[in-house]
Length: 219
Length: 220
Image 1 (cartoon, rainbow over the protein chains, first blue to last red):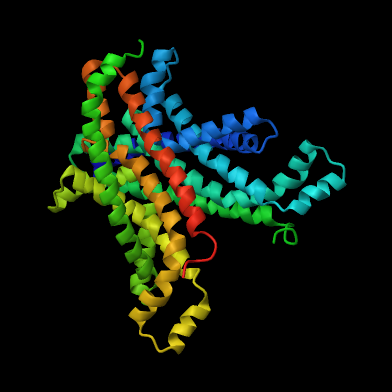
Image 2: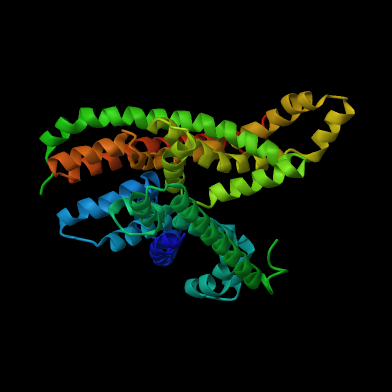
């Protein structure tokens, strides 16, 4: 049994990489989701076209292909990325494209009368978006963002295929060294599930906090 | 390194071989996911807690863990238990199980959306349970599910490159082997991306049509 502590340590090292990827990927995804989601609702045709192209491209091809492209093809254009950078870039851009549709849907779900009230109060576009629309839309987005974050966590497993030593990669290392398959894979399955549960628990808590004081507003 | 059309034509036949496996895996996986999802949805509705609880937990577990790791589990761990599967079979089972947990939610939502009055009317008309399901509930529940199901099948299609990790010779794997033997990555990997776009953009348009056709009032 003593030998396993070393191997479990290896897997926990991988778990740190997985958590790091999930966090940084989520930050990039969140930023892209708001930029592209709001750009799709923009007054300017160019912004709408660009955002639509970005969203359809990243939703239309798989994360796996995007990751390989970022890691193997971008160097030929003079952009050499480390596996971690390529992983964060591909994960963030991919999940950001899904998030953009969530942002768009949530902003559109805010009732017309809210926009009219903003005009009546003489708020400018920025003020009405920032003060009135987004605070309400955010609550609608939150549960789906939580699901997207879990999808991102699950997608991080793919980076093991570009030799980044995340949890899945370490499990393969342990498998190669010990010849045991059940222990490493069962361990990481449980760890992934624990992380996914932590995300959904956190998002639910956040949702409760943000819903405070908005009781009368939401229908 | 520059884009080389000659090389593209040279590797195209190999990639087409991969495309066939990709499509085959998607089709078989979709069928399995549709069946598994129905099984999970029905089991979770079961009044027997010893059935509904474990199935519910298992579905949550599968949904919360990466498909890639599940594929490894099926392909590397099951042989120790005496179950050795061909790579493609293991891949299809992995896809079917993983997406089955998603389609189960679609079925659940679809069935829950049938108004209570329909169940009561079926009971009032003295229909048996199978009659209630096949004549009353499913005909109303199924059409609104179609776009959501199709959405997951398209998502599954985009996940098939993961099968290359368990040595299925699908498109991504063919592209990788071509790239590794010729040391050219631009063309094979880009072509894989183009292929996925070529399939998924029309399928998104097709999906929008499905949504228009089946949204709103459930068909009678």
